[in-house]
Amino acid sequence: MTSAEDTKELTLIDHLVELRNRLLKSLISVVVLFLMLFAFSNEIYTFVAAPLIDALPENTSMIAIDPTSPFFAPFKLTFYVAFLVAAPYILFQLWSFVAPGLYKNEKAVAIPLFISSVTLFYTGIAFARYVLFGIVFGFFISVAPEGIQVAPDISSFLSFALTIFFAFGVAFEIPIAVFICIRSGLVEPEALVQKRPYVIVSCFVVAMVLTPPDPFTQSLLAIPMWALFEIGILAGRMANTPSDDNDSDTNNKG
Figure (cartoon, rainbow, N blue to C red):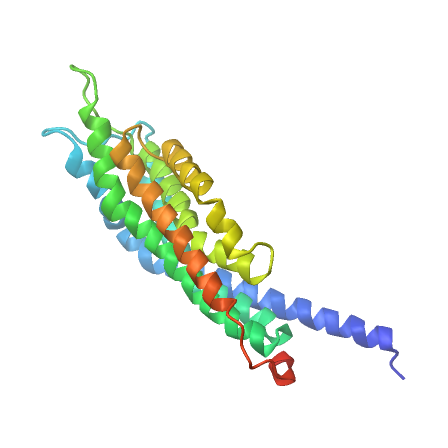
């Protein structure tokens, strides 16, 4: 006869095998997308760098200090793009792994959070690319000392762009973080409202670190962060509204 301990061990092994398979599928999806996009790597880089290229003075262009950077900079960017495109599928694989262990009421909350978090992360990246970049690069180039020719290195630009994309993608997750804190009971909405002045100051401090030192550009990040914080409080209040539907079946696993 198989003991209870053996059964648990087999179950654990089964879970580990499933996790391995789902991680393998995620890795394959990234590799396949990368191979599909690699032929367009130069076009992808040009698209991302377009706000900087458009802001450069006439008869100037970006340069490549390292002889290998004309190949590796677009290569690296294409890999990150492939990962971003595959992110919903990767998150779906992780969701499929953890979903069987969730209760129905937990799934009802987790699915909207999953969709919202992915959407907000992409929105943050789009905001940085289409709104912030043009203003930031225009500012940097306009304050260059007279007689200095601005010719950004393509690898340095890529590092800067990836940092900004990640920072704005994470910053736009503020409503999700606020909602989870309220939903889990870690903090009450009223307590967050009382701390609003500190939150506003914190938003501008973060904006000062991530953007050039002019009030207008800093406001482009600080004000959306504040607005997203308020949205998170509103969503948390709506989720905390008392409900009469507290039947025991909502706690059954799906």
